[in-house]
Image (cartoon, rainbow, N blue to C red):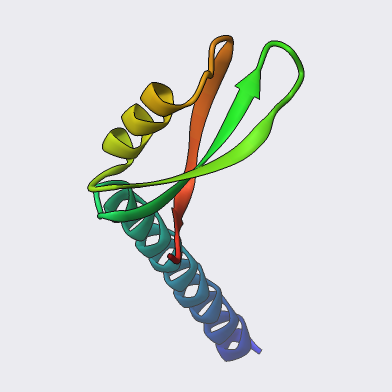
Length: 87
């Protein structure tokens, strides 16, 4: 009986470690996507209630955001980066 408890505890610890590692890996990919070239997707939160999704190519998410702000009339809108999307 004591061995079953020890094995169960060990299994829980190992599965918890794997979940933490997987979450860390996802966050790392998301961070690298922000600085990667490609098409970046943004959500525009607008004061007039006309929120929308926008996409723009750029060397980084910052560059893509700058291009969006320069090319479109987004007065009263706040952009939120959603991620890099396949072109």
